[in-house]
Length: 185
Image (cartoon, rainbow, N blue to C red):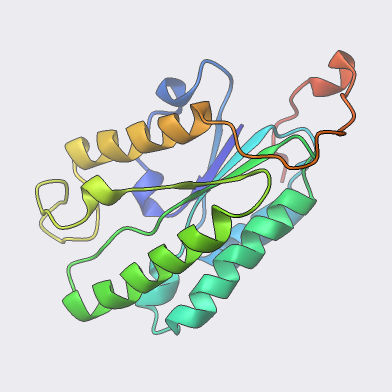
């Protein structure tokens, strides 16, 4: 299992995410994550969690471009993984700027609608982290300890969830091929 994301995943304790090994890779933007996906060996990753996009939208990128970039990143990731693997896309969290939050909400809802309809993909809802400042540091961008626990709990819930798979004729892989490889750069 691999967790790739921006500064908001910094304080997530990967040991608490799963009983299995979880590798955490920090990447600030969608392009940074895409580069990591391209250089990492992904065929043995059973679950990939992506938490990215807020830095892209904060850098004056149009919301439509961020939506397409996140959806394309999820598809790229899935294409580099085993067919039975899952891509988990964690929704973008709000920031202190109300105008920016309108764009973030637009991205959040559009990505959610497009990911929820895909085989082998799960969208992580973070509704509890919207509309309240009690989960954020004073910068209104980064999560405090309580906010990080809520983010992690939402991701754990998605990890335990099984994505919808329309094709029931998927070939089982031999157990010997299910061993994990670390994401090597």
